[in-house]
Length: 299
Ligand code: R5P
Image (tube, rainbow, N blue to C red; front, side, top):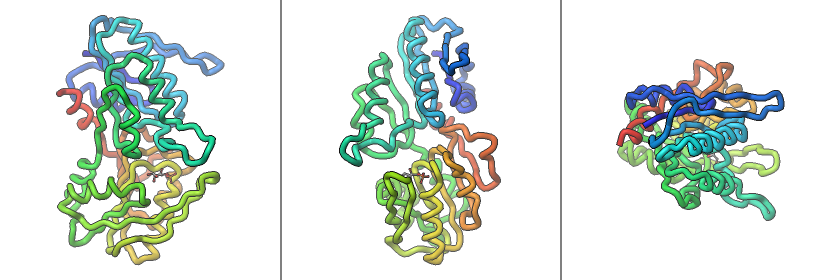
């Protein structure tokens, strides 16, 4: 078995490789002055089972193109099988047509991936339950929720002193899942509206009784507007301590500035996307998903 990483996931891939007793194999990557990328496999992969790890966070299109070129290079080099691990599947929020005339972008991405002769794709905490149905090749859907639940227990946040919060109605399934893992920790949901053109977020009401400590659970933080609007609403409703757990740190559009406010005590995210150095903040803690993925690959 050989394991490769694209340029977006090197740290995570190295952790995974160590965990499954492999050495990360390498590509040669040339970036031309016009931005075109040329990839070359530097190892013999004939008859090997190959794993490629590449997350599709920002720059999303570039990371996808690199993934497609990696798959092609490995295929041309005679691999026996290819499994791709895409911890963050970019475009997943465009999983349906919101307004007439729009593209269903995630379906386009999935069609491209499936046309490339791969055997399996491994993904993490997808935005909606509609997405797995769009795949016709084997798809493994892992979740960081149990890792989050373990951390919540370790911190001593329990059913007596804490409430879980979904920052929007779309997160209900997720919040019920983690509540079950945490012995039915009580939960409430925020009613949120997002302007489809401007991206502005308005959090209107919390359905459910709040407590002093609230833990917001979300699949991703992109602009941070959902978390900020939700935190302001919780604060108005009397919550004193707000903690956030979100799987994917997309961190677009000054998100970290929005998270660095006094209402929020701590933000936990995973390394499904590498957090840029300039986005490091004492408020943000990164929890690794390397073991979760390594456990699956070891099977
Ligand atoms: C929305 O349905 C998602 O679950 C996230 O809450 C949302 O995508 C986060 O985006 P942002 O950080 O830009 O508000």
